[in-house]
Amino acid sequence: MKRFICVVLFILIFSLASAEDRTAAISTIKIFIDDTEFSWKRQSEKPQLVTGDEPVITAETVISFTSLRPEKKMTRSALEREVNQTELRLDDSGYFYSAKAVCIQSRKEPENMIVIITVKSGFLWRFGGGNAYGVFGKSCIDGRRLQVLGYAGWNKNGASVLYEHAFDSPAILGSSLFWDGPASLCTSDGTAPGTSGITGICTPGFFITPDIRFCTDIIGRVDFSSGFAEDSFCISPFAVCSKFFSRTLTSVSAAQAYFYPCIEQNPFSGAEIIASINWTPVRYVTFAFCTAGGLSPENNAHTFNLNWNTAYTSSNTVFENRIIRSGYKPNELTVEKYLYASFEARWNMADFLLPPAFNVRLQPFVFTDAALFDRTVRDAFGGGLRILFDNPVFAYFTFCYGVNHEGTGRFCFTATKGF
Image (cartoon, rainbow, N blue to C red; front, side, top):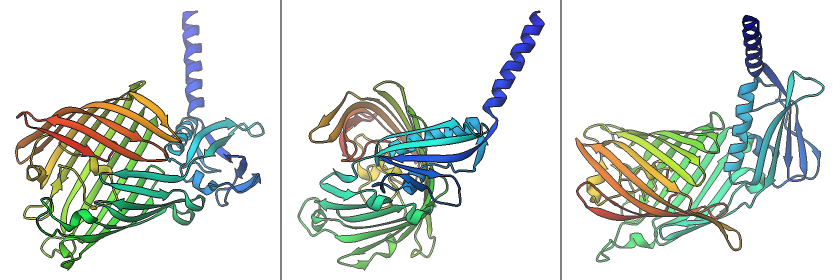
């Protein structure tokens, strides 16, 4: 009798596992944007309007956040994962007040699945700022993943354009033009004229998957006093992968290389990699870990700055957060090769609405940073506070104080939200 029960249980468990991994085909993707419904039944066609008027955000923009397609076959477990990640990507985009994605079994064709995506258009104007400058612009222009931002202030002035999934394709087109601002007209002590100029960045690229993008920064600078700066002209390819495992576990990783074509002796000037992970095991508490490394050939002019990143060196902002937050001099944190690690424990102390519609989070945290280079360890231990203005402001201010093992401290202010 016991043997019979064991056999029945084994067959039942095996059947459930087989059902979980059984291949299913997506027959239809239904998209609800506000009061408008679209139906997408053929991969070779665009989603068709069923009811309602043309929405503010296009159906093509919504489906750009997913790898799901009608007529696509995949296992049930893989389908469930991608449906979940589609919802998380839509939620993270900043385009929508709410987003929901589910899949159900077709009644007429039980072997097929129907995916339902429901979103509510969000506030698309953008306000923000950083250290001594402000930002104003708009996202999702014409319902597409097109963003235009203007910058004005003491140390940053200019504009940037980013068009993702350009013309309903995987292409990425980006460009920006910045003037250093009035701050560049004099040196830090104000006793002599400074070096002022314009930096331009052109960034073509494409999406490999909704989570992975590959781009190339083409960076040039013109100084008002000396003209085109040959040693600043850089071609810098990079890849970024953002992964949404769940609402409580996310990661970002990137790799970037630097080439200076005008430097004849060795155009290749270095490469960096970085990876970070955020985990929220309990409500209001987040643990974040970041690790990075950089390598530059010997006798090369390229260096990595672990002090803080204020120059317009790339459209890739992932590397902005790898800094040592303690009392080292800037020249002590400018290196040709390094290994880096950082840990933060964050507490979401308060989350409130600042009238008329500014979402604000107060986030105290403790941290430790460490870097190894030139057979020397640079470290930092301390704490701080972040003031995070979420959608639609997108402005982040981090104040912290850290000391190293020698007891030397430093106060840091950065306009970033942390890794």
